[in-house]
Length: 443
Image (cartoon, rainbow, N blue to C red; front, side, top):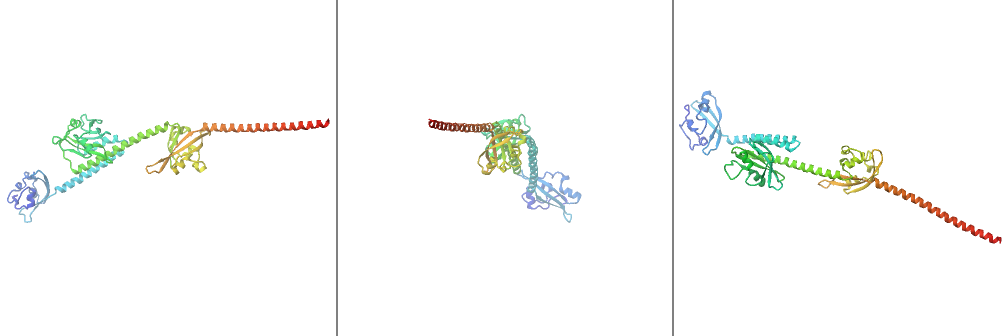
């Protein structure tokens, strides 16, 4: 009424303010005894309506007896006859929670976008990890954000990146993996481990976390293909609760970081394997090239490039028949046997002898061996070609052939001469016989 006394309150209104039954003839301040605004006339909806004469819309934050807070949207309007004021209010607590969740989801998506950009723009993971953790530190208002990765035996973990208040807690720090520490639990159990208040419960802080003075935190496993590659830790200097939406985004972030960590490990292993294979191929005394299905050279060792008086960079990417044979089409189209093409066609090793030429046009005789390279599906995607310089052997064979020919010619000459001598002897015998006959007649 005009004296701000409650003339009527329906059951829903009484329930909203924590009253069991409708109340009448009590002052609105008493009716809204749990409202933090009931003692401030200037903030009272009724006073504002009376002062301005227009309906007033606002919100009340009412705290229930159990400590839960409920938010009501209140509309205060003048009755038609001017005999009083009507207050209608609706519980919008759940709607606000949904609104807040949507807002936080949008913020979370922004963080994920910025996180992805940080890693995509960096050449190496370690260049992006610290900026990414700084981003998470600010977004989740944490005191400390760290990434820990376990060793192969899952006995010890190393904090590879740390941002925030560290107090001697530097990257490279190692601690044992156990179920007393939430980072260890996250790695062992493969699920998030949460401590809302270290002063309560059975969790103990690791020496590193205790040194930093953290009071709460959450550690989330970073999983890739069902394998744990590490844990992402958000630590706070005050007790803290974690809601479902927040936990979901933290899980997504942890898995994104896990993918990049695993990718970096794979790249390192690939680089090590590549360096090892290159070392082996360079150490072989024969020329080695890898040729794809388009007959382009994907790799050439130094022996091969030296044999053809070219730099390795010149050879790689070129067509094998152009710089090996100096021709504009594959050697098999010129009637020569091409082991590489046979390998690409059949998937079986092949061998042939070719004549190559150096920069001075001198022939180089080589034995070409080709072997297939298969993809995971069993398709031939390339061929390894090794060339072994057999110029010395071929020259020796040519010399031997020349010697044999000369011997054959000498033999033919010697035999011919011998036959001629035999014929002469026979002629002499005949002459002697004829001479003897003539002598006998003369007697």
